[in-house]
Length: 486
Ligand code: BES
Ligand code: MN
Ligand code: ZN
Image 1: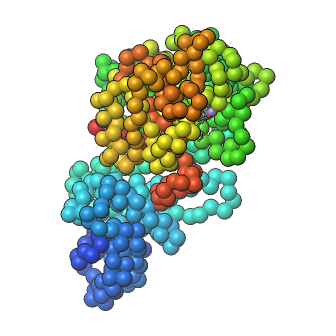
Image 2 (image 1 turned 180 degrees about the vertical axis):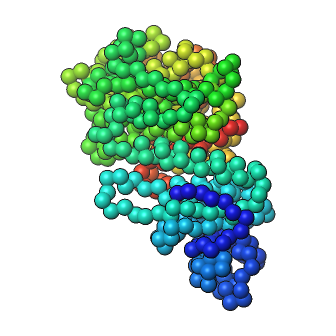
Image 3 (image 1 turned 30 degrees about the vertical axis):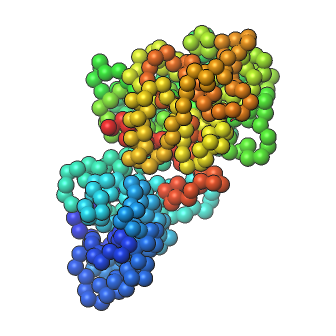
């Protein structure tokens, strides 16, 4: 869907305005004839501006064929997500009405900063119209154009452009993450990364033999059981000055996680196609950052493997050597994510001397036990970096909650026979013991780990949001683009 801007609504099929609960004034409609105005007032009284409620009035065509009132709820309860949420409802209504275009009036500054509102309207609308329907003969239609009625302020207009790119980044991440595992193999994921074209973007892919030769023992062990051989995907975006150290983003991409020899139970195993979501988030961020021409150096590192049982599979009892030289005793081949991430983090630190590293991974079922399916887990070795990510979390409503990582947790992964083991003790603090393993791969770079096991795709307990239709959510793309811009 294309986004246009205008200073007033004109000849549109559908004009949407937001109204707050109990608000008298309805702004954004321009001059209406007396009968339409009376109908609009009646509709407002009926729906009362309640959060998510809509009312539609048929008008005569000037400025619109239909007027849609969308409720924002009580002013005192307005959050940084309200307009995004309601905009998603509005866009889905426009799609149901099968209009090819619709217009949305950006709420006045008395609601919130118009640039922020414009961003949220675009994100909410674009993200909620995305559907994973590539494999369905019958596809639902969507509007081609959304026009935003917005002033001429430079700030607002550049917010519009940025929000379009951010939303497209999220949609890109979702659409790759939703791909079925027979289609999206590590090699295919590498092809997708190579196709992200931008003048300041370079893609390198390291295949299995070279990974073996160069000591990526975690990636090659986990990838050994599958005929779909592993890849390490590296995207270097150089939008900043040469001397500036990059931010390294690492994303777990297990294209399918059967658990390997420690095989998973059959129930809901199909959801393990989403075990590549961390990597997809990194792809979405890099794509958007390069389109925005962010003045920053950013490196994306995506270890891509398929975790399968097979003749070449690694086993419980194996001792493997990771990229940084440390050894790991394998107790459970289903704890594979930490092994491939440890290689990627160590490589990222050695090769790029980054100012910061942030990794995304659907790492532990324990994270769902601890935090549920609306909040991601965060573990860090650096309070300042963690605080900055939390600030971005508050601004974007991509929620993260920090968990502790003190020496007692580090002790949980000590092994009798190797430097560490790939599991903690029983099920105690599963998210933190996984993070403790990763902590061993980072020497002293400020690092944040984000466990997205609960939030990367919609699950039974996920709070329904129009902009997160069923399937992958692209969690982390908006969060980190905010961080990189701040
Ligand atoms: N990809 C899974 C984690 C996961 C499970 C994410 C369910 C989302 C939903 C990960 O590779 C895994 O299997 N982790 C194990 C670790 C355990 C064996 C220490 C887990 O969480 O059970
Ligand atoms: Mn696993
Ligand atoms: Zn996994």
